[in-house]
Length: 110
Image 1 (cartoon, one colour):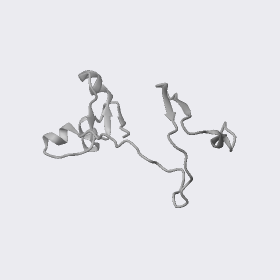
Image 2 (cartoon, one colour; image 1 turned 60 degrees about the vertical axis):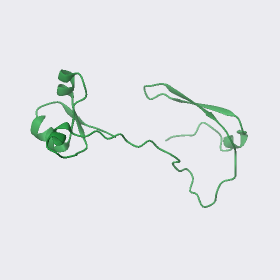
Image 3 (spheres, one colour; image 1 turned 135 degrees about the vertical axis):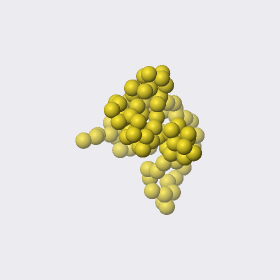
Image 4 (cartoon, one colour; image 1 turned 30 degrees about the horizontal axis):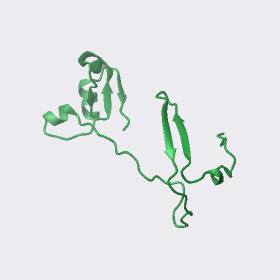
């Protein structure tokens, strides 16, 4: 079970213009520095916590479908073709079954 390392009143000690740091250590060791611009009262109509902003996925489209005049989002990566071509070879579900059936493939997560 996850236990928060901070006491329940930890946020009460944060002041305007304080600097907070956060390390995302899921393999990349990315360090974030957050600067508190202002502290205001909670809005009663907003359910906390909520996503303020999030990156939109950058979908890639199947090149085989493009050649056929269709636009289909890639959902699979073929590792054998990627190694052979020295670039990511991404395909849709239709083409992974028909052209990469005996290859090492994995679903793509956006």
